[in-house]
Length: 173
Ligand code: GTP
Picture 1: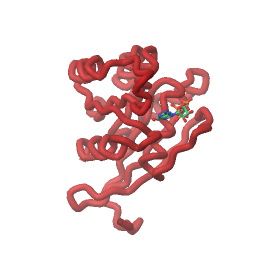
Picture 2 (picture 1 turned 120 degrees about the horizontal axis):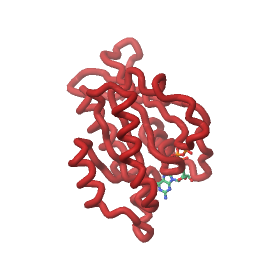
Picture 3 (picture 1 turned 90 degrees about the vertical axis):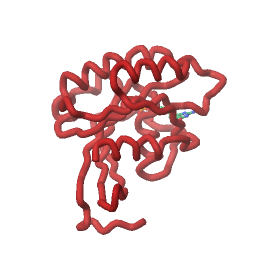
């Protein structure tokens, strides 16, 4: 569906966060451009991509911010989270440590983002079934306890990427 720029009803800022190399940039590129890049470089600074969707016959432009998971590139925080209505908190289902750090990312959100921000926990790289290190149940339990939405995705195959973003945008709406 083609949307005319001047018919946008709402602009929703969404931030993507999580440890380095969990696939934040690729999940976002899959949603924004339906693309996947195998030799994706680590993000430096902040970048954003947009995609416009229809929700309940309103035109919503999602402005999705992506930043480096690496501590040394993270000069952002307050500016990055300012005005964000939603957050995609991504971990890698094959790297337990990236899931163990999710609690810290939630703390960072609670400290810097608006208290009404909608958070979606994303277990990415779900295509790597043989290397799974984080059981789905662990993430479901954590998400329920923290009041987060949850989905497992694959930026590579595209599995669940669209539905996760749409769910987040609908919840913001
Ligand atoms: P930083 O910018 O360093 O914070 O990393 P990032 O979280 O943005 O990770 P990025 O999107 O650059 O992806 C890291 C690596 O994981 C790349 O080699 C991707 O090709 C790979 N990758 C990302 N998503 C998937 C996925 O769903 N499945 C598989 N198999 N690999 C993925």
